[in-house]
Amino acid sequence: MPETYDVIVSGIGAMGGAACYHLARRNLRVLGIEQYKIDHDQGSSHGRSRVIRKAYFEDPRYVPLLHRTYEMWRELEKATDLRLLHLNGCLNLGPPDHECIQGAKQSAEEHGLPHEVLNGDEIKRRWPAFKPNESDIGIYEPDGGFLVPEQCVKLHVDLACNHGADIRTEERVLKWSAKPDGVRVETDKDDYAAKHLVITSGAWLGNVVSEMTSLLCIERQVQLWFEPNVHEHCTAKRMPVFIHFTGDRAFYGIPMLGDEGIKIGEHHCGHITTADGINRQITDEDEANVRAYLSRHMPDANGLLRDAEVCMYTNTPDDHFIVDRHPRHDNVLIAGGFSGHGFKFSPVVGQALSDLILDNATEQAIDLFSMNRTGLGQ
Image 1 (cartoon, one colour):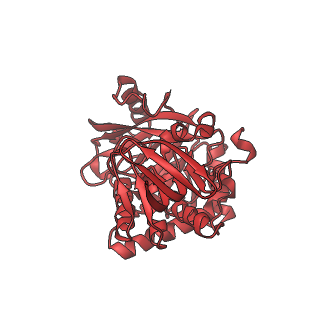
Image 2: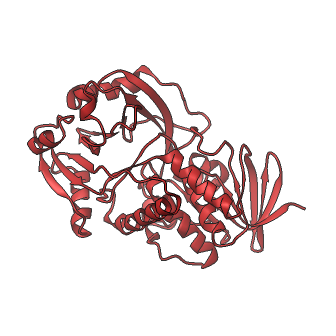
Image 3: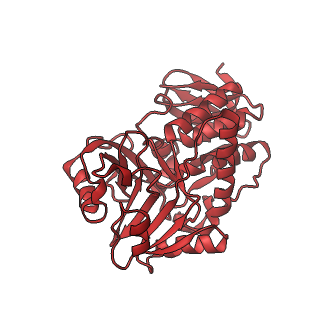
């Protein structure tokens, strides 16, 4: 007979680790299964820093979730004496009529978020690392900043284990089945049974849930770290995190953390790929695109390339998440399609998943993430 649990969680990255924690702290017997080691660099939950912000240009409906996720990160900090939130401000930069600049402004105004609307001269005066286009404006929110993803994932997993969760690493899920009275999961090492299954497999979600394959697009992304030419302009004390919308492109950056260099990437620009077929080698083109941006807009940061890493976005057609029950199995929950902007929400997603299992409902505002929404294109 297979070993039996209350809940099995498949995929222990940002969302899976948080789900394990919230389920275990509510006294459920939890098994987490991860095909790699915890805080690995093969998926979407690594990169040494991740932007967190509230003036959400994607949709104002995210803001209540952001309020809650900030509270939860701070609760984790208080409980562990770790610093997870680095709030050095966030600058959305671009033409005043750009939909994302308008979206950030709308979210800030609709939810009463502290923010400033700045012209190019004021941006250059405050943060000399930036050389915006002549017509650019900035939406600056002081509550923005960054998280350290590897630290966050490991913390959720460690806390889950402290509450009794069983975490199995370097073990790959091969198949699963569900009936009203329970689920079975077969891996390359063992078989398991549980009352519920939570699937948080990131870029591998379509491999694990066939119904998701046509809804997800896996995008190769490259993160690059540069040695700044002018260090003092590129530290967290002198520069906010930023997203710059210029022409038909968007670039983002996170200031120097220790001696690792300044992190720069081009947002939603990667080649379409598969989770197992992705090219993990850094190409000349990967660096050239970012170099061209730095040369024009951030020459103080355009120094020696220190490091680069490949990660993946798992995109839905409308770039909103999926957090819902499986369409045919009420005891199977799915969380995926985080589309390059989901990491910051991992505590609140973990809580919502635990609520759905234990309470059959959640107070978290996740209606936007239903699998039955029109924009998903089913």
